[in-house]
Length: 70
Image (tube, rainbow, N blue to C red; front, side, top):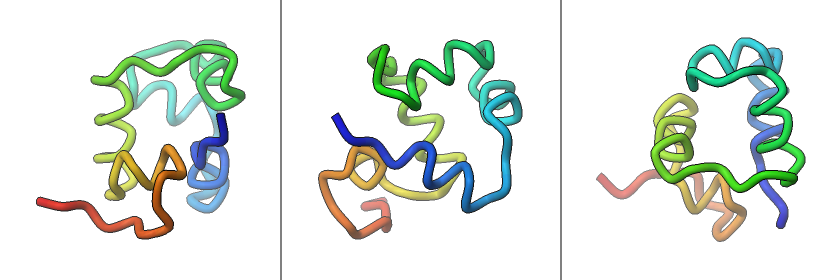
């Protein structure tokens, strides 16, 4: 599955460790999420979308529109 996690992280000039700390997980765990080796839990996915201020669908490449529906 294609994710935008790496693109978003790199566009904000963040390291995997910095994002992992925000998500309360290890850098290795976040690396697995970013590479698609592990599925990201729903709560973590929502937290990541809130962190970048984009929709979950955008992070999961289900849309090219990053706006959230709040």
